[in-house]
Image 1 (tube, rainbow, N blue to C red):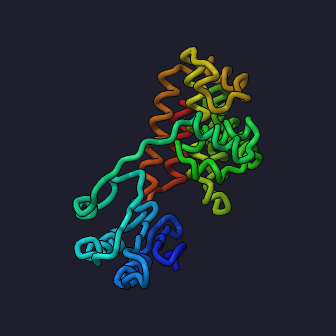
Image 2: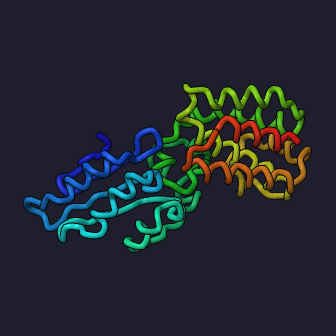
Length: 259
């Protein structure tokens, strides 16, 4: 089951295989009808609510329309526009801005990260403290080295064969769970190169230790091309919520970067 009771009065629904299945919402619906034994209310949190499919979204509607007076439902998503209009119309919306990178970095240092690892984890966290805390800096540096090779092949050597092999590797079954984070890592690398191409300083960079390598890419690729590549990556990230053909999309991205 993918509903976690973390507290007698707090339950969390989470995704399995990138989707929140209908049976998870039905479990929530069952739990939501029970009144608290001692407390005044129970809270149900649906994390990454944009991962609900049509069936699970429709299953949630009844509970949203007629919640028990002692039940509170919280839907968390970074993509509210992907929720069904019928879901959004029944919710009160609160918007939260990403946490500033500098504040995340300071927090990670207090949690025991060394300064270099804290800067790297904060930079790839997309403004999420929770995401930053899960970063394995050593593993991230290893993956980053491979992905730096990808953008070097794309913008400098234009080695399309190597890029297609890299796309194949990114989409292997054993790497499936890392696809989105690898895409985000490519985005931050390209962003740093773009920043340098515009005369930016280290203060705005995520991968400061890679400045010499990124400066070479910045010198060999026009700022407009780097910006266009970032837009292509963002487009793929937005489409990950649907059944995107990742291999085709990655091939297309890399070929456009190398054009």
